[in-house]
Image (cartoon, rainbow, N blue to C red; front, side, top):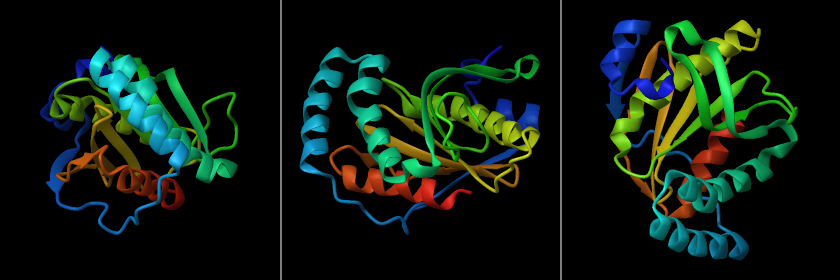
Length: 202
């Protein structure tokens, strides 16, 4: 069993004694960050390619990765960005698998080091189906942080098709899902949320 085998939030609630809920405007306080002309061009071209190819890999490479890299660049002194790495915390519980993207509050870019702040799950179709998988990855990140002696109050997550972004938060054994749907047509808000997470989740 791996992260991707979790398809329902009720699975996480039963297995890990967590609760799930939804809320509006979880990141209302996150300010927008102006997108550079260079990134705007990359996203415009990337969206055309990603939507035409319509695979998770294409969406990850051409839309998601450029936005995450921009957020990381703004906070890179104390953060590392990882893509497509194996993340094994408790394989016997299903807390294991390949994560699309992980961001940690560590300057070590060679090895994944606690604390992990954010997990990003790429999808090319139905976003709600990814909530449970993302939730499992956040639970694993929180446990990893604790085991490494670097616990953080909150771990954040995101499920995205590249063109559509939904954010999650995990703290106090509660998975909170933001009901707000952020679209790539407004990349300044998405970038603002990502940077806000990296600057505050320590």
